[in-house]
Image 1 (tube, helix red, strand yellow):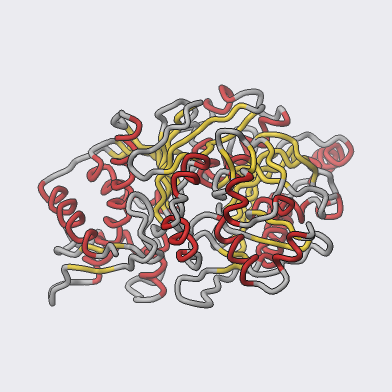
Image 2: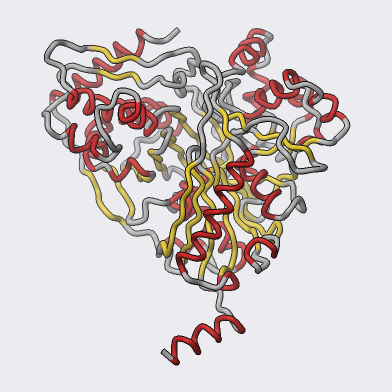
Length: 507
């Protein structure tokens, strides 16, 4: 007992920097995770927040609730781990991208709910821009397609539709940010209005080749530049946690959008390395090094990370509905009581019974980019069971991933030898085996599937010297399980039915 007391006293007066705190600001919850120097998860705290659906295809969050749940998670994880906040070396932040928040600089209050990345209300704005012949201008500068997915048209909608916002914005009184910016503003109590290059590259108004907000694009969307945050490196000390929050000033030194953070957490550091994250949506992203590959197959060119002023690029395919489909099956049609039960139910049948699900619950992303597409369950007969639908649901996630991976391989000019996977649904062994079969390539799941949060921690720790180099980080990455492909005749049938049936729901 005396030794423990002495140890705690030593830590109080001469604390060692043993941990990195990662804030994972997701689409449905705020999480705080502590990692130690070996990359192991020490403690985690999570709080869900409310999803608002005010109109068809509209999705919103309360920014204040996002902040409050994140703050609660921060305090909770420190308490759970029974550590002194002075033991935390640094803070890394990873976030749902494209989600748009505008707040008043004078009082720090949001002027409207956060418009979530899934929200489709700006589809008309996008259509008008495309019909006006502006798609090439946007794509050549940003690497993105004109789509309601991205932040730029969301900002325009707010300024055009919420009373007085345009006037206040032009007077320089408002601040825009993705969720990382909003959290940093609150963590530093208004001292810092920043974002990193990965999040900036998802706004539709950032020139990824020049590394700056683009005046021409801002003019086209009528967005004042004063609204925008400073763009910083993904791994850089940009400020400190205000002492009033935990009683300690901790450097904030890592920022990355969730998919880029997962790419880094998976140690996909070389051109050609690829990972797929199975979360609310599904996002496959490939490192292309210093080369910003322009897709010929409707993939997105984006910034993977920026470290010490050096930009690494990536090519990405986005699927809007993955884990969200399982949530829908649980909450709306009640075929399971909890999401993990979907695997057990699907395993009770040998195949899908001829059923195909097209999971277009928020339109269809890459490579179709149809914001008006709606979901469908096809091939139902009187013999169709819940288990057939469950299996078809898992297959649909893997099929959508296959869609984008095939196009990505065309752009890269290579066939992937393996696919690294992460995210909550990657723990579903059946889904991973289906994915391996449909791709006819090995699927590799790491021991730590929380690679999004881990990537943010790695970026933060690199900036402070907690980890000395990426070589040290690569030693921490370990394989949990590999899924070898074993395709059969049914696999080809699944693919053929999918290609036929997905074409039917495209508008």
